[in-house]
Image 1: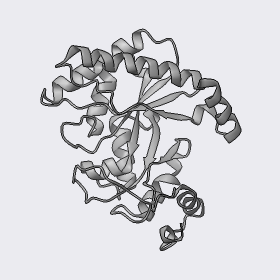
Image 2: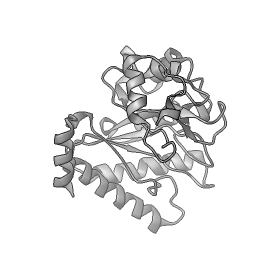
Image 3: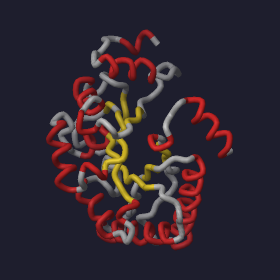
Length: 242
């Protein structure tokens, strides 16, 4: 369905270099206790890179994976090993954006330092970047309301130039809950003001932002949420009008 997808992209007016693909959640590069499952994840990611390139997109977001009892360092090294295998056989220019995670279970990529370790250890660092998720950062323990502080921390560790995408989500949880439950804009513990500070931040001007907020009463909230960010003004009870 690549041709069908390319047609939809053209009709939407989205520029290919701003199009972001998300890899399937079933991919887990961090656990190699079952070699066949690990190798399946690698094959799956290889095919996803080819599909992403086929759409003309330049970035695919990937959850780094979970070590599932093998330990953090083993998991990080296993991710790097898998990525080296994936990139070795891939001739495209598609980049993988490692997403920051909330720390649920044995998830990896919960800190900027872990993301940096993966990038720095990979034989193909130019093919890697980062995608931050505001809900995941909050649930993982970062003070997302200190927007400039978070961006400074990214600059200090990974480098702002490595930031390839931002997932804009409110959170149903308090900071450090490690639960990863997204909420609609302005209805969670992060709040509209903070999320707006990311969306309209000059330092993130050229970084694509993506909403992953939940449907409300089986209706998509994205038109209303985007409009509030365009106007930089929160509309109380906007969700009740869907």
